[in-house]
Length: 119
Image (cartoon, rainbow, N blue to C red; front, side):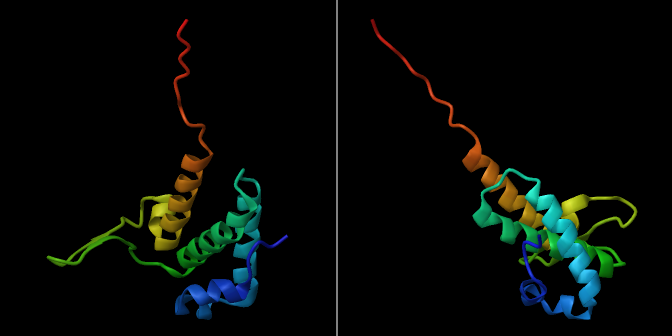
């Protein structure tokens, strides 16, 4: 079961128009399988799948160094070392996927509390 569509991926950025439908569908399948195995609420599954698909697709078309940090004030740009695997940090879509998962983990995590009974 695909959790997102070609159209939704292509709406993220014009970068995805150069990727063939078959290849993008394969990334959607991979991301759908990954996300469906997670214990996340159903309303977040499409969004997570969309960003993970975009991450996988961008990695397939990015052959040079990836910008991993940009600063605007005193212009600064930091690139990744292409020889090192930096996983989800390699793209802004992977970073967004990771951010959403982090927020969901915070919501799901049981709140710590102290129950005090005075006798």
